[in-house]
Length: 334
Ligand code: ATP
Ligand code: MG
Ligand code: FE
Image (tube, rainbow, N blue to C red; front, side, top):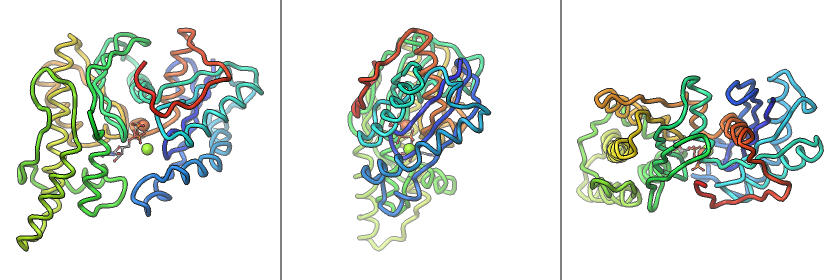
């Protein structure tokens, strides 16, 4: 069976063709990052307009790269939430039109479940159960994946997501959007123990996160240093900031995995691209005898391959959508 996946939840227009549940034939991603960069963040209206311009060429390219055509597609999987409503609607409308005209089933996919399923494309041997640490631009959550259709969210952020914290922290430091990769790069030359930024909600047995205080802490630090006439060491700020985020994520991920009694941890979402997070999770996993997996960079950030994969599994469980499928901007797990 061939699944066409479509993803337009934020600022990436993407289409992918998948055979079965894990054999990726193509994945095309048109990113709008350069377009939004001059505004310092994603402008929803501009995102929707660009999705409209890109969606059909991106679908056509994905089909061409897979060496197939629309007539060969057996089902269509599309992100219907969470995300920007106008952006989601472009993908959902395209998917519904294609499904209707081809007479094939439509599968509405939760974008966050998609991020987790990116791991199945990367690791052939991975099967549930496992613990997933989802760290993206808009979400931070620990999700216990019991089987392909059963997800239990053990905790999530009360305010900012990890990626959002990186982006806001970078902004107060005067770095360009998106801030995650910038801080990651800068932090490699800095001292992570130079500044003691707060570790919020670090206490035991609590799987909730809070990152909004961190941005204010960075801002306060910068202001007070400048008041004192000190030269700012941006690499130290970046490294210390990153360490505050990463430490809490790693600590809670391992508490959750022990409580749920799982032996495997998978990382998902755009922040999975962070080198320090990857390294520290690996170290902790080795020390505690936990299997640890994370998707390659191109599957960490938004892409339609992960949506096609999640959709294909939903189809095997008989979870299809009808043509009334609508965008749900605030969709959560299950
Ligand atoms: P969501 O999936 O919650 O709807 P999103 O799709 O916008 O949000 P992703 O595309 O999964 O989020 O991830 C983008 C986020 O990842 C941005 O906040 C970006 O700063 C962050 N990010 C990307 N690379 C890195 C990195 N190397 N270090 C830290 N953060 C990073
Ligand atoms: Mg994105
Ligand atoms: Fe995402």
